[in-house]
Amino acid sequence: MGYTPQWTIGVWVGNFDGSPMRKISGITGAATVLREVAARMKELYGSTAFRAPPQLRTARICPDSGLLPGPACASSIDELFLPGHLPSGVCALHGAAAAGTAAAAVGAAGVKYPVDGDIFRIDPNTPRAAQALFLKASVDDPEAVWSVDARELPERGPRAAWALEPGRHSASFSVMSGGRPLRSRPVHFTVLR
Image (cartoon, rainbow, N blue to C red; front, side, top):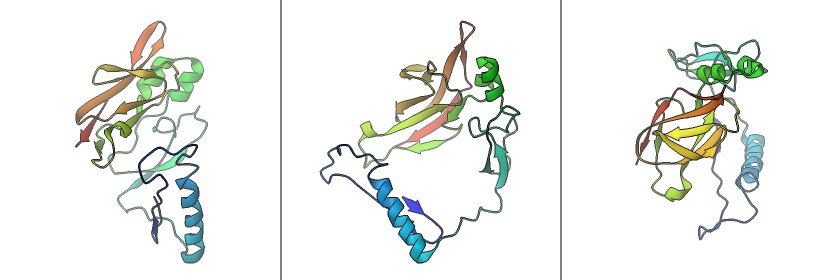
């Protein structure tokens, strides 16, 4: 899907019988069609930027941790927040990682996605095997160990896929520092049928 305040485009590329496509992904299939159609729509009808709702507030954050940028952050971006949800902590991820202090990095940032309180819904029209939540850590440790509901996932690293299950869940990861595991703050989320 692609959209502006003036128009919306939906593109689907695939086999009508539901069989997998060969050597074509979303990036090489649907995305290229979407890009071409969007460019033509902009040419024909123009487009403008979305106006942010007036109650939202802008804050500059570190794109890796989601917190206010610290002195060691290589970049920063502007992000929109609801009042009362502006980040209050300063990113310790980059300074801690540069100093080799995994404990500070995990404690400062933790799970980047999902966010505490997120709600997901299982799509009844999509095969369950194709529905997953992609967990993301704020530390880039290839040995990070993920747990959902205190059950360890087989996948290791800063990202892991978890098959959606209905109910309330918690996710966290741990990394080794000084020979002992350090666990991130858990995030809690809900999956609806």
